[in-house]
Image (tube, rainbow, N blue to C red; front, side, top):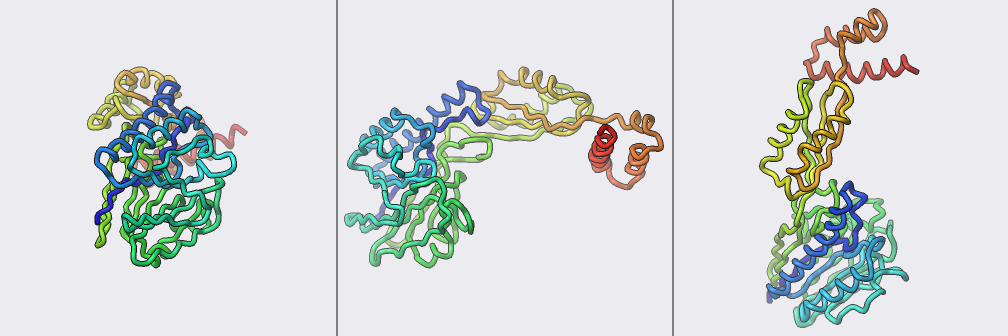
Length: 365
């Protein structure tokens, strides 16, 4: 018998995006996009008649989740029946006394693993045992002991936490223990980057939508097919937008217009009118870059959905003028020493910048 299910995690319904450098309008629409992507995946699961959905923690972001969010998810799950949803609470939506999971009555097709130790749920009609445990706090320094699978049936483990991070405060679990137990599939949550493992049969589903500029690349969910002989895992990209960070090197001869051209050239094959972009301007710039940064953003804003310009430039020092001023002082001698070295031009410039910054700061104390 083949079993097919969708493995998701880290949806973070209700998350507040305003703290992640998004404007107010985009922060609010991002909350709705997270909702929409999750609903779209659930709808696909029903349309394609998968056997069930697994959610490996952090369905909600408890700090910002509203009653309306809870009611909406409960209604969404009820609409999936008879398809079942099996889920565990993570460190962002723990099952304590004040847990958001207690705010609503969940439909009969939803099973929330409520124990803080691994408990089993036997699905006799599918010859399958699902193991899971939920968080009841925001940190858990105890390494997780992997349970022993039930014999003569297929076994699936749901876990939210770190993998092979000894001493972690996020319920670490070890590859060695997983391999020794021999589960048919390990459904992991907590790490937002999707990853299918080779050392054992399992995956981090990742978050369906990236949550900030630290989460690059594709995001989505795992489509898993399990038979008596093997388990096949496929990552399905699904996010509506991406966070993209690029670096642009400014030259001393650059203007705002030439920098804009460099940015357009580097983003030509990307989707600037759809995704969130953070563009770091590096290199050397004569004078303060702040005014140029504002002009650059105003020039490019119509071409981008959401654009952040990050100033990482260094002042383009007038070396000849500094040597004239400081003559035979430590500053002047340092300049001549670096210029007479065999370092290439780029390294010389960096050495001059770092050294002069330190020397000149010392003089100004």
